[in-house]
Length: 338
Image: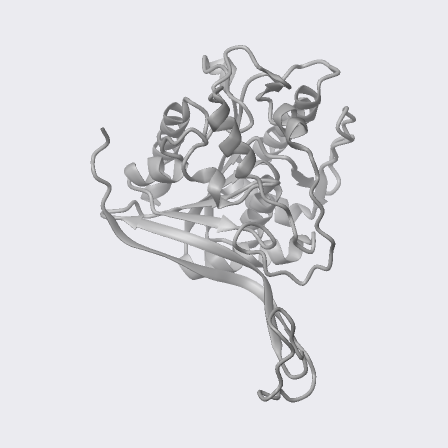
């Protein structure tokens, strides 16, 4: 049984966002009906992020800021699908303050200026494959994802629609607003959260390190973007940024982690193909960072003897081992001593 975890402070707040204002003067004598409104003279706050935070007693100097991936919310960093402690709690026990973000249009940050029609889209078996849990209906051999039906049920129910404007601007403005509010910290990203993590490192000097679990996209100097990489799930291209901006990423420690079941050669499997090119582009990203004097590392878990991890290493059965790697990396880089 785990020891008690003592929290000094916790809470929730919104950051970033926009405000729409309708012209005219508000008339508080009019009633259009519940769920309806006479918009004249009224405002609409939207496109913000929602942040939960917890600060343990005697916390390390720099907290962890968690950014989720596609189809996910802050829940992916919380309790695992089979009910074990998630990364949020594991890192709190190691003395780190934590900030968990629901990006604009996700989870509890669902108040959006986007106009769209939401339809139920049956896609769960597709994501089972993409996330390298297995090849539906079979789990990968030796997989670290819990294979009981109850855990899979919980996993499917943690997915959330993206009802955002699909613009990077509100995402980055929210992350910047958070970093300006809390000060220096370590950004921890997952999957599609990888790209905004790199941009946050470029745009905000309070980002003192970046940890990225299987990032989906990368930035490069605008004259050194690698050739696009085609795959079964589409062509992956890097994003070019001015050299002066890219150089900011060479000033902070960076680590990338990739799990298992990622081949070197082209395959006809969705998950394998999707992450084959992202791993290869990640190698080019790290090489470019270090060629310009940076401090980046890419860790392929099977190559250090850790097997069976899916696209969600932070909630796999061995997530304590994954958390230990993160703790050791932060200590090795002396990040909290700076």
